[in-house]
Image 1 (cartoon, protein in one colour):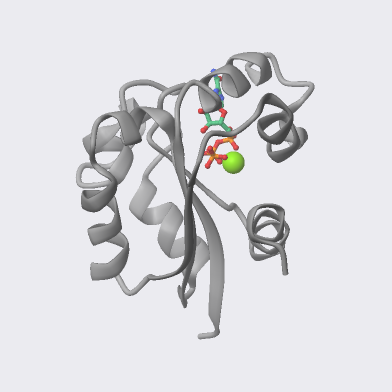
Image 2: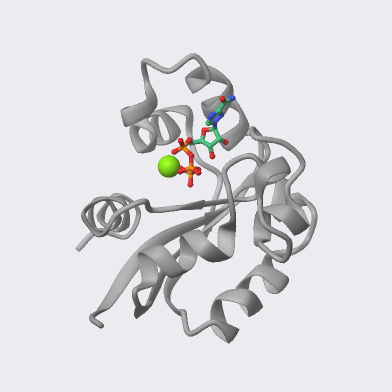
Length: 135
Ligand code: RTP
Ligand code: MG
């Protein structure tokens, strides 16, 4: 199994809830190493650029508004099968559907305020890591 990297964002709701450390512990205790990290207040342009694939979707405006509503914690995670591993730890997009013990089941309120982002493929992970951390 190849070591890969993925991009994770702890969204404004989870930062406001003061659970960055609890989420980091889940990454670390499941074999994901934090290899880059920064806290940021995203601008509207940064959030729109990051979620550009969703710009025709009905939820795009609300998603951008939410992502700029407060600081986020952005990290690159490294480990075996990191993209899928992180998605498993996150749980389903809608916390109502997220399996017990996942980050979204335990910390998210709604499909909009759903605690974390994680890249959905190795290809997108490379693009998203470069978007926030450069090469
Ligand atoms: P993310 O990109 O944030 O990791 O989440 P995801 O892959 O599980 O979900 P995605 O389909 O990429 O959607 C991105 C974010 O948009 C919000 N969303 N709202 N109201 C809705 O139907 C709806 N669908 C998606 C969610 O906050 C989701 O995380
Ligand atoms: Mg996604």
